[in-house]
Image 1: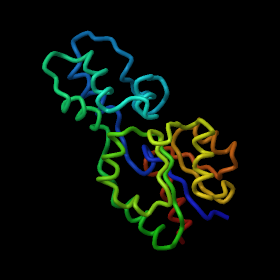
Image 2 (image 1 turned 45 degrees about the vertical axis):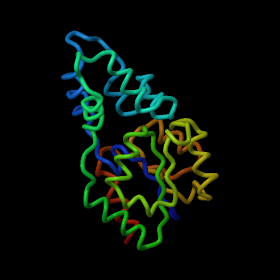
Image 3 (image 1 turned 90 degrees about the horizontal axis):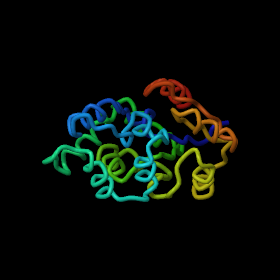
Length: 206
């Protein structure tokens, strides 16, 4: 029986479109600059970008993140332009998902967030997704200094939330993260796109 839900953020609760950021960065970097720092996999937390990995586990600050990217940018590019490019991937929070979290709260079904994320995206999330105040806990990689699929990230969630994995539905879009969840006995659901998981949770609410 499912008693709790653990959500990833990107491509689950929050719709993201990394190509928007990639296009924005392409307009800022110097012509013919070949850099692997900003990649599609890296923007998705795919561990192909050491810069992104360091940022999402809190090893570097937002200022250091910007300074690193600046090395590859045209003269005159501002900090704000770099940050705007980085934030461009985040899309408005869907009303359907707002209502879903509200229903979970009203029906007293605990939900938690376990996300690989960075300081600037956390700030955006707190401003644009106030419904997360109803979460039983927010387990962010930049605050835990641990990123999925490291088993320690999941164990930190278990130990600090008091949930039992076998009673918990865990929803994530990355196979490596899902496999790590399965290894710890979570009931797992792969989000094949930003909305595919919604009917499953709506059925639970019925």
